[in-house]
Image (spheres, rainbow over the protein chains, first blue to last red):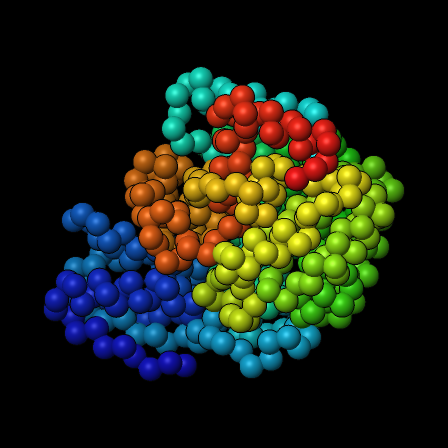
Length: 111
Length: 340
């Protein structure tokens, strides 16, 4: 798992930059809120315009879609594996299940 | 070319209606991805790199139909991921064809024969299986990173044709393509009896495992000229001849990113099928709030400079066909003579 990218928790621009990085990250992240809550999930979208700026996630455990306002975000940690990280076996026969997590012989953590 | 007259008429009348209404931007083909998971992990694909809990997600049939209604495009293409992994694919296709939509089900065909035997689909003039074939056996199996897939796909194509289904192929070419081998491949596909072929250069997805094989613009033109120049008349393409001429460098178009909008588990993707700059909750939000001037080659956007992919430029070619008598004439001449 990748380490945290420190988000400070004060400047809006810094949080916006973190959320932007998380949006382009192909792994799960952990969002820490001002209330001390940690939300773990895939950050699939963000609304970064206007006063209602928010990040949208699919929670890893529940599958629930949640939206968190930028003003409530204190930090974003890149805690899940980057599924788009370069792999070493390009050109070699691919895994039998492809990216299908339901394929026989595959576990939930090996997409 | 390989487009049935009824389908061509449906598309033509739709485009003309949009123009008569003065719509500056309108969708031509809805790209509908009910699932992102796939049973292959191709080197050039950047569509499937997500955590398992995301890959398990799927749109409901109701969500799919609502998107189709909202978009209004006459053609629905179902790529993915692998749509035959979608548990409700039979129901979805049935609902779409009964709404008079022309459906291209884009599949690697690994599960196609099984689904046909299970009776999941019924033959329809509105349904075409668009089978992913990136070349002859050696090239295709290398492209999809698994041996044996070419033979499985050829077998499934034969089965679908025997059962009376429309079958087309879709081919993505990279800088590893050899023109003579591609020509042999097109011959082989026509020998199989497919209705037509679709071909496009690949897009340089940031997330794709293989970052070395994407075509630059000049190389794309060079490759497609070598493949298409003096093409046999028997090659039928299920796409605009003007788009093929664009790939050969004979025409210059600007991208039409709203032409093939994508609806997926994340929403309506901005700005196009290839770039992921965000998601809109509704189709109208996508069309109205996307800053379209930031995309396309003339915008200077680096992500767009080498892109000549069908989802952005085929709508441009169709638009050009119906924008002038010359466009209509050129398209008709290429269609009738088979010359590009």
